Length: 150
Length: 423
Ligand SMILES: Cc1ncc(COP(=O)(O)O)c(C=O)c1O
Image 1: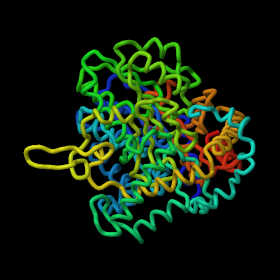
Image 2: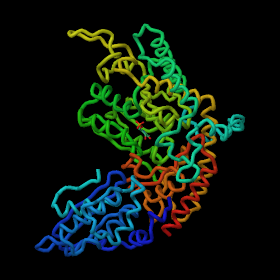
Image 3: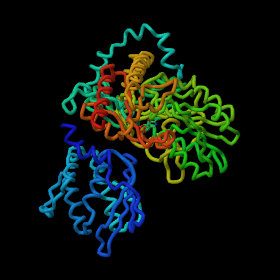
Image 4: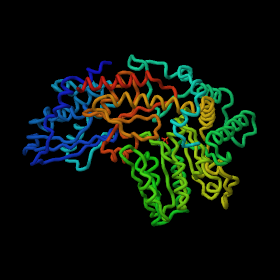
């Protein structure tokens, strides 16, 4: 296994300079995620339009490079998307990182998120890559409590 | 000489050090001779669990191949052999920790169960609302939560003794926390997250002087330093087999005989009784009173083999070998820019916890794993300890008797690689 497969330049860059890591003044939804394995916490804030699409998104919290880069890349990937589109991206992403087939979303493009697919070879780290997504889903579903990866 | 530091052993035990041949010891541990991710395995996760020598593996196999049988009350030959071998371990463990009597040795699953047993069986009868239980900031969760549960049950109050920036107990503050309300104190002999060796001999006296009973968590002590419960005079002591080269699922609680006699049973079932009728059940004598059900027979016999293995090499030699490695590793790690050691006590076991500026421990752990190096990353079941240092996690390299300077060199190279990647 090559460590550059996991720690690609794009991931290292998003870890060093996370995009949308800030506080959203006018958030309409907020959710917190927690990974008990590593103690990592992430907060996702959303500003939705009347159709439920994401106008703006921000995250806060700190964790490993994989979880920080994943949160950062996620915020870029979902901005402007509808809940339905986001669900499709998450399902596709989730099946890629857990090495499962995803016949339902053959045509969904993952774009830059592809950089994270290397974690599928590191089962202990998959949760790092999915924490932000689970938290986003909780925010969209308006589940009040902290979500955990367990 | 239970709390003797490795440094003083170095001065007094020269001959046995020369006998210590790490390459010969490595040959005793088959698992070490493999590659992981294409690199020779460097196993530095001994504080989580240790590897097993061939002698222990052979012992386990012999139990199941030659005389596997349930113990006690069997009249047939295999059962008698199994019972004899199992009970022999009680004597081996007694001698290993220098208890007065075999009856003070209780077989349990692990340290966690031992602490829970003491909290459940000693606690309620001896603590009332307003009494205090004193622990420290450097405890494993298993030496925190059982006491929290006991406090909830009895209305006793949990007090926490502080530690300094080096990860050492602050003795002045400790003494101030002890008072006539303190009924029980519990403390790690050696901290798993920091490596600190606590001055337990002194603490026992302080606790007894104010009338408190004391339990010592020896999970991290047993594989590294000689334990002498009689000299320590502690009331309870616990070790966990899997960290001292024995199988998982077997551990020991030592308790002073009089205290054990007074305590009610832990669980009800077979073996812990003398006679059962629906009107009245008469409990078995200690230690059997605390050993309900079929125990981990092979595990206990394996633990006996592990204790014998350690004793044959000698804990003094082991401690001095590890102390050399600790000194070497500490020096090498400290040369790495951005690396901070967490836990720099003067009296320390060979555990090196550290943070790396700008890199999360999980990333360190994954990159080291790709180099074949096994370390632990995270909070090490000691979240309050992490909090004390203002962090959530560390990378921890913990050594055992089979580790070498080459292992440390590999670790240092690995950490430098991490820095290169994250640079
Ligand atoms: C100091 C200390 N206490 C208690 C424990 C718990 O041991 P076990 O899981 O074997 O019960 C550990 C193990 O990590 C430890 O390091």
